[in-house]
Image (cartoon, rainbow, N blue to C red; front, side, top):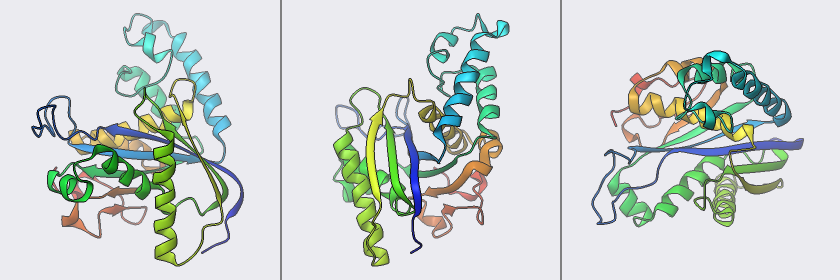
Length: 260
């Protein structure tokens, strides 16, 4: 294992989709209206969050001052925080064009919501399912820099800091066990609302691009940002194993995956 790089490094984490499998009556509703067929967990990583925040703050000013957009109903939300699902197409284009030259990379774990796996591996517990993805997402990254700061996007009470700390730590333990080594770096886990933290808005947009590719078969957003993606794991696409880990050497494309 290489010696960690001295200094502080930032990770900003968000989800796309949901961990829900059943309605309140216990009926399987995966893929039905309001229940996604997949859950994506992703992070953007950077050594320079200040420049990203500055770029997004400048974009907010430009968007708010654009006469053409003033009557768009969603602009009230956009002016508070960029959110890919809610922003109008013109704003999405402006956000992606702003993102492309910025200094960050992104990684993703995509989990197909397979009931058999949910029952057998996670005892039908949504939190266990979610936390496993967190552990997987951070298993191979926290050893690289001496000080890591991980921010999870918090919406209401959905993300619990202590639970996320435990999930990240489990990922570290898994890495140590597989490599027969000890991770000596420092990792701090925090939660933050996307409003007020542009870096969380960045990963919201990146997740949305991945989600559109998987669920809608629409690759154009992902392709536009592909240079920012260092890893995408389609975790339960066992048909394509071990080629379900998409990297620079094995670029992701929707034509490569098994049907959802």
